[in-house]
View 1 (tube, rainbow over the protein chains, first blue to last red):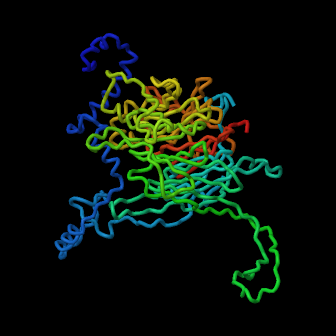
View 2: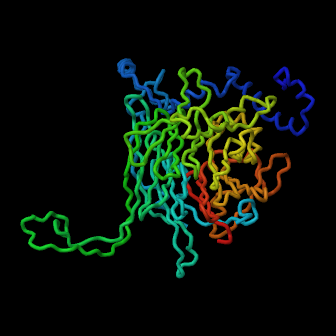
View 3: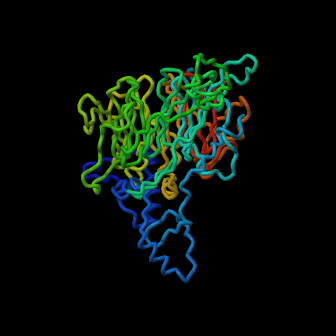
Length: 117
Length: 446
């Protein structure tokens, strides 16, 4: 299973016990993860993962979707926000009640007030 | 101060700041800690966009036990939450970094930044008030100029010390991505700011212009393979800076070679054993912090499991590798699932570069003495917070047999992370941020 590169076949024989112990835990963890999530891609550091990091804070709102959903729900109770409040595209249509408070409270930090020992 | 790092000299509890909250409010989570150049001031930033500055008490014969104590000096709201409507982007007010400027006059200056905007703050003291103005009354009302028949010189009266913080410069709109670092240059005139893909150079006096000095954005974003994770200017050579990446590499750039430093002067990377590569390899190799030594000869990088010291003259591999919490290697699966594997730990040097410190989980932090090669694990907790009480070294048990004072890996609290620590530039005083509390420890000699 290890080795990987054709020209490095000799790694099999050079590995000492110490090295093997260092390699095994990480590989075992990888196997555990792949067992739980079989569709997990090969390259964790790839484009998708990095793009998600770059898009932190992105909050899209489609007023068309919002108004259509409101019209559809006219006669029913508006569903309250699901567990993932940050999801504002797709199935969940945000309502003004769902959005977190934008303004900071301007309360003094507890480091400046509070207990001083 | 040899031995203070690695367990030679015991560390003692000095102070703790912050409330004992069962449910910690998000805004109270400390996001950055930084001593100024003299160590007399200690600044913290939090997720609520607030900055609190502590000042060290002077030696006072009448209160000897309070010598060296840090007390609140100033506090202000640095950043507010914003929404960029054009890009549908929510901009957090969280203070990512604070960097002090060297002191040049009575006032103190610092740079604080959130994801998008850097601000220069002036903190000044006022301990006198003036009376006897010519153009206005004592209550502030303007006097009718035609009624003024004689000139007088105002008299200054002492008043209770007032510390005022005012924003002097706002450096905005220069970053498309999220700012992770700021670094003041040794020329004391310029500084750099780095986001995921670009690094900009600013002049402290000029807010409407900045120079882009590194740009790693690919023409096609599908080809994106790595991002910039940290950047810092060399402490003495004003033309040199380094930046680290999510792939575990560090590039050193020289601004004399070209205006756009896309081509590095030095490239630091430790060769990887291809047979040990796993799904996690790249993630845990991502560098979360890079810091030059005070001497400027070395730099230190922090990745998920270790701290490495590099000699700037040797690019092929680090000269030292210190394991922070190697026992987590067999927990990577669950650490990936709970996102802890993406935690960004910082690291710092002591004043003489003989010791280094970094945080871990369960409110543990680690110190490595580079001279004696000893290391110690300490804990920031309320339980060991009696004045001048020595901190007891902690040990994490990895095997089956757990000794009485050891803690097993599975009992570690991964919500108690120490991401931010700072070491006084001269003395053995350290500041450790444990979520919403700030701990200050000193060595016994002090």
